[in-house]
Length: 180
Image: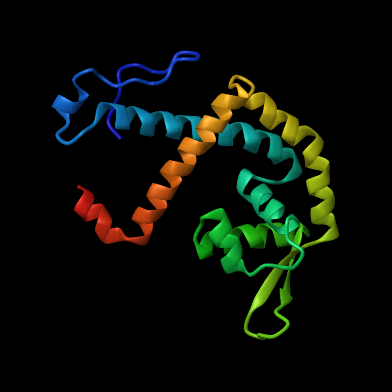
């Protein structure tokens, strides 16, 4: 990421130099500003969530993993969890190891494939989740209270469009080369 002269003041997005595209061949000033501001927003959001989860021994990632399991009637494979979290198998293994040590999930044998293990939420994991909800969901609403419902809908739609584009690029690495 290139440097930028203007740090975001409260309520002001980070902007790059007006001559950004001239200084950096192939650069698009608005695209760079979008990327910088998305990264900054994600970092601020993750920090706030992690501060809320830390007293419970959780992170944003481990909370999301527990929520994925809570939403399912049956245990899931680590592969399915990784696909939903959009993380690597190694990352899932580390998250599962942490949650298993805490007694929040357990690895259980697959009913028809003895080579596989499935992951299920323990009663303690369900209890921890239910204890987080009364503070977590209102905190989410408060974090985004600066946006109207219409703005939130627009943000979700635009992020979905961007995510779909980036997922397509990830599935077809040759496309990245063709797009440059």
